Image (cartoon, rainbow, N blue to C red):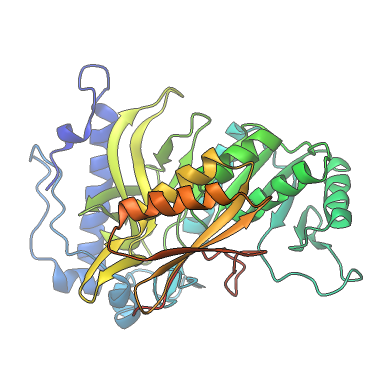
Length: 408
């Protein structure tokens, strides 16, 4: 149970009306789910009391295995044949399928476009997707692929000629929305600096699919300016939150409500009636509060978003800790030394030792020693080493593998 007044940082200056309206929408979705969805009808006993002075959702926490094992029981009895299927990527476990209706999906798309316009994007803009697809094998392969009339895809190639071609293409368009993984847009920005190109003009950069690291954000902002929209979500519910121009991570409360359970985010969709997801354990760590931002919005706000909950540093056989503490230490160090270090990754081996992989612009011995000292201060019982590499490994979808463990 969350006393909703406790979610508000400044009770004097923030109106409670908006939060109360959100609570009503969440409760209506809960009542709908209990009445029309077999899984909830079977697993939910209590009826929500709207007269209580706290936010109480007497629903069990829904996890990914529940969806895998009870997919059809989680469908509404009202529209059993009106949905289409999307599959998750499995970044927080094994992939699973999710049901959507076109109406629900269109509502989400409209919400994203509302924020894109806030960042000066236009519906007429050319949309360029820059994903971390496998590097091309020869210069003859196409670097720019046309998808539709106004959508294109850049191949993950970062040679001098490729960067020049990308920039020339962007500058030839009337307006551009550049969309991609943070690590890929960051590398693009780094190469623009390295090759001394002038940055192309883009209306909006939308980042999605990976955690945005501080050093990545600073370089992207330095090259392209502040029009950076960070889109946090999942295939199950998209978007969950979007950043404003002040960097605040605003929950999309027209679409979802967010709780936390031991710093693990629980998401309730307030628009998905085809397959309602109430108190869904999305697999990420973070904190949530209710507040008003400098941008003028009053909403739930996600802070300390630490990424996947199942990324653990193992200290001993039965002792583990989320890698966020080590990640924060290394990220701060990389940000402070971004003139030397471009990228990093962490690899824990079966003997519990940790190897830090660095992509560097120049070799500076004392920098490496200082980083080892900082990491040792976090986990004195572990052995650390540094390995200089040419690039950080990507998974089969092109996402940067910042953390890997050989244990479990």
